[in-house]
Image (tube, rainbow, N blue to C red; front, side):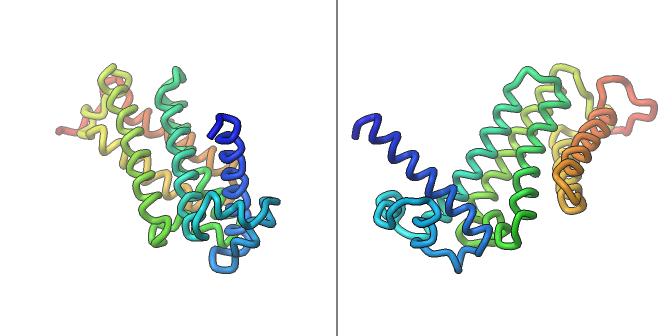
Length: 207
């Protein structure tokens, strides 16, 4: 296939996934048909089957596409030259903001990122583990450079990651808007980093 042909195929695939995201969120997985997706994407039904064998395959591919985008955002944040707090915040936003917005957009949208869903669960479980690894890498590198000193307080880098993620999950459930979610995540990062700062603790916790 020519490069032009691959590009056209890629554009059609993206259009199908975008249409599926809208429809699954609007009507749910069960009530959405291949015909609906083709109509929403403004392409022929047969064209959909050139890219995907079934609605189940579309759903799975959509979940994988979302997970890949979230992981890419987290990796870009990790590799950026931004200050430590900004990189950590960007990683947390990549993990929590999209999920928050998509779940709040429709009661059906939660199906996409439900860890118990047989079609999507494994995808987002792996995505969550990768986010955790990326965040741990940033924390470990910062500790190695002396930017933070979690060991002064009896904490490991993994424990700092757990605190950040646990706090993020709590904020995700309590936030009532995306701006509130982002503001609270920024506050969480500032508080945690202040608590494991490079300076000596007044009352360090013994290891």
